[in-house]
Image (tube, rainbow, N blue to C red; front, side, top):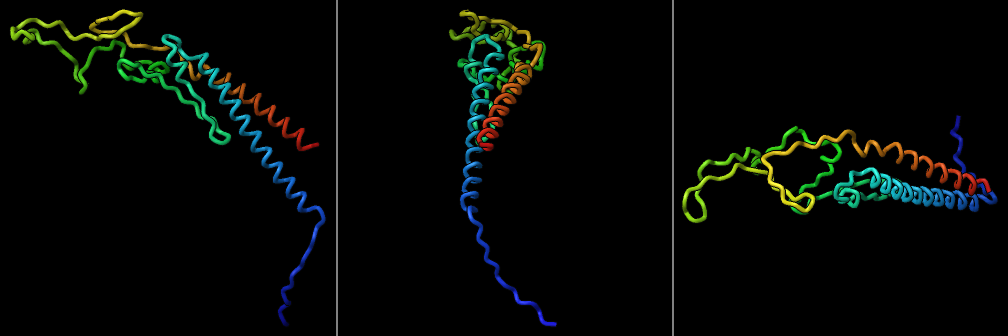
Length: 184
């Protein structure tokens, strides 16, 4: 039995080009709406986190930023102490590991003072024990140790229900706007 020949079928549908153009326009409109919603959610999340951030120096609240990448929102926080260069965001969220903080050398060993040391004049003299030096409330504090910070709760986790509710409301509005545009 001979094989059937392959044939070409040409079909033209009136209005198909217009329908394809409408579908592409709808896809662009959906993408634009989602990106706009992501920017709105980013602004809301930034304000909510700034509201929940600890307010000792206001440096943490000023360092919270929200950036949109496509339809995603990336939240960052940076709070660097200008004197020491230490970024204390993690400490503000989770606290210190130790209950009592004592001064240490850069290698991590404790700084114990020698009883006798050579002074600038060349004579031997006694030296005070090592101490933590920091400025707070406009005053220099010199303490041999300080109590570690232990927050009662994580301020980021406390703000997440509010951020999720704002995102849910924004996406619902976007969905309604797309549905109204698509149905007309």
